[in-house]
Image (cartoon, rainbow, N blue to C red; front, side, top):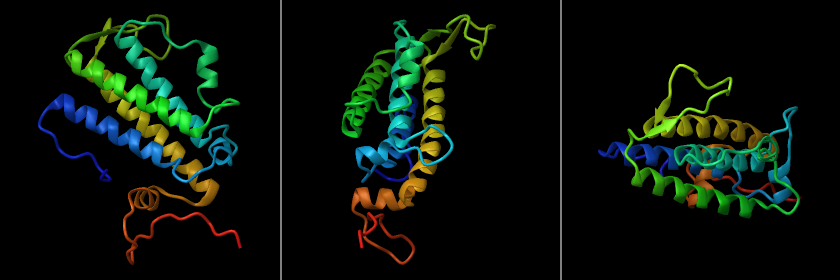
Length: 190
């Protein structure tokens, strides 16, 4: 996948393409990591690459649940959403994220961008002066939220082994080495 979403004339497909691009770049932060590395919290923050990707998937699932007016995530689910639990692997988290992405795309394609999404009441960070968002608004919010967490994951990943976005993308996609960009490679165990 290119480093940027391609232009698409259809608004719904363009929004889905931007969301897919942000999913891709957050997933890249896990490229080449072991499960232990994906659990690592190398800064004063409790954030890990695996936890951030799991959180992005859970948050997207939660928003699509709001679109469908289904139960929202519990406080316990929210806390566990930021870390890989015993028995969870990076592969299982990425597989779950793929499932969430398919569900999101199906729901968005089935409903119009102007479809109303009721604003949950009593949540202090949600506005209390509107009754509903549109699916368009929800998609834009998910793009922004995923991008925010992709940035967090970039920092965590760089702290683990120095891997950064474009060298990771080059390695994942098999780009050739150039004078200005070397694909990421694991450190040699000398």
